[in-house]
Length: 98
Image (cartoon, helix red, strand yellow):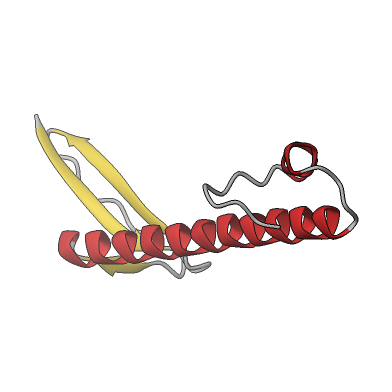
């Protein structure tokens, strides 16, 4: 049984692949507006999407950590004990801040 993988980008920009199997089956048409891609083009585009997702996730983590540190420092400026300020803010840097 023959097998082929089609790689393409949909009209909406999503990356997609389709595995076609069968004997004597013609390669199906791509969805309307889809752009065919080679396996290498698909892999490169997928890697780019994954890198963008990771960069976005890293930004969210950095923003959350900055907010925790800001909350911690605000609590400390109100003379809240360090342990309590860390617990309330979720701030857990290895360095002591006063």
